[in-house]
Image (cartoon, rainbow, N blue to C red; front, side, top):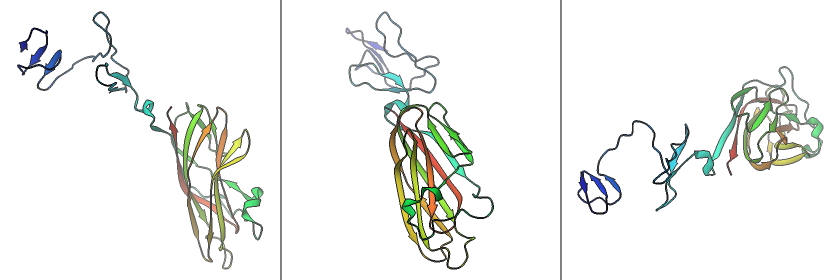
Length: 227
């Protein structure tokens, strides 16, 4: 250890560059306090927080990863069943697929792998999400249509999937529509939306096909963009 006239302390160095300069490993058995001053104890942070730099000349501070404008995953769901459990939903037939909400079905995720109820709630019966914490939400569903029960001449058609805001007013947030030839037995859709929601806003995933259809395996993840 060496001391100089500026009261800098060097460990394993004769030329300390800061008030305390450790040229080697450092072991901290208990708290690591940052901030404070000559008469005030610093902050040791909370469980799960990380130490973040505030730039030269300023004390670092403790904070969460989410506080740095990251996407926090708040919901992960899977659909492992087939709806309806028997038979098929009725397709729109020759009617334009974009004009028949009455034929459209909600894609319901029967398995909730992860949910943070501080941000939203999910009704696994209706397939409707209710927002708890206002902010931007990134919604990314993967959807499968099953046409395997349809006979010859009854699989070609158009599939349309949407992320739909339900309340306070119905609004399509994202949508994809694809056409498919005869003997198409499965249709897969990916879509994504980043939307600002207020508390108690609701949304869901909606699906429809021109021919009779079933809804089978899929998944979804929803993230919250921290302010």
